[in-house]
Length: 124
Image 1 (spheres, rainbow, N blue to C red):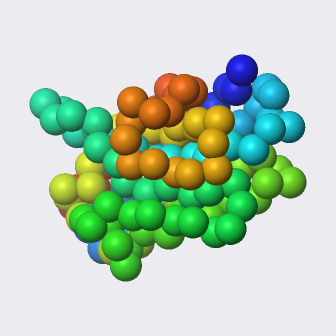
Image 2 (image 1 turned 90 degrees about the horizontal axis):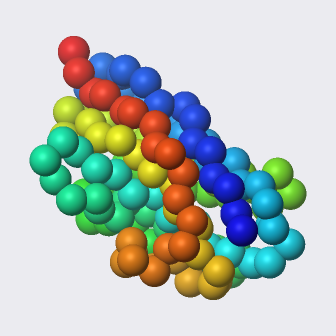
C-alpha cells in the first residue's frame, strides 16, 4: 500500500508559476511510477505528466509540454510538478497517482494509488 499527499496548490495570476509536491509513504521499497492528473469542473480527469522510477522516462500531455516539468527525488519519496507560464485553462484539481510499475502510463485506470488532490486556480 502507498499513501500519497499533494501540496503546493493555490491561486496564481496568468503567466505565473507554482510547484506541486507529492509525498509518498507506505511500502516505498518497491519501484513505482508516478503521474500527475487534473480535473476541471465538468470535465474528465486527464493525464498531465508522468515519471518513471528509473531511466528518466517523462511523458507529458501536449497541452503542458514546454511549460510543466516533472521530477522526482527517490531518497525523499517525493515527486514534483513545476508549472510555469500558467494559463486560466490550467485551473483544476491536481492529483498525484502511483502504480507498481516503472512505466508512467497516461491511462488513469492503470494507477492503483491516488492522493486527495490540490486546487490550482489561475486567474487575474
